[in-house]
Image (cartoon, rainbow, N blue to C red; front, side, top):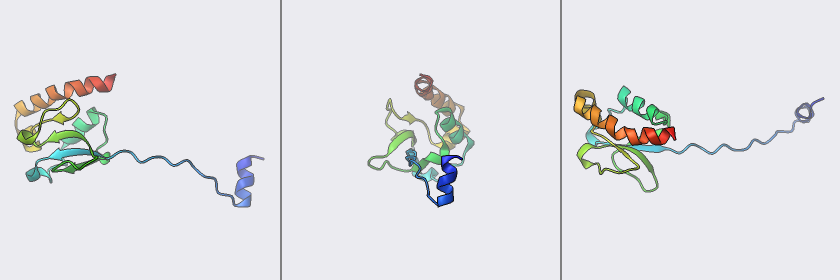
Length: 115
């Protein structure tokens, strides 16, 4: 008889190693666009970068200790090698130039993901 069957028969519960929760990542958005986060562009970009939208939170400003992966505040954004910077979602949806700039900004992150 298997060991697990003996333990079950005696009513002994086995411990399982705790799985650490996945880190919540932050996407900064323009305060006027905080409700426009259901766009397919956002979910597509996040999946291309290897992130699940369920593990992301959308905020208008960074909180201490948060990991920022994408800044969509437009002119408020400061270019950074570790954070994807783009125009706000309304401009990404309406302007081809904004999408092209986003695609160009994504290239280093996609290359880093492949390595």
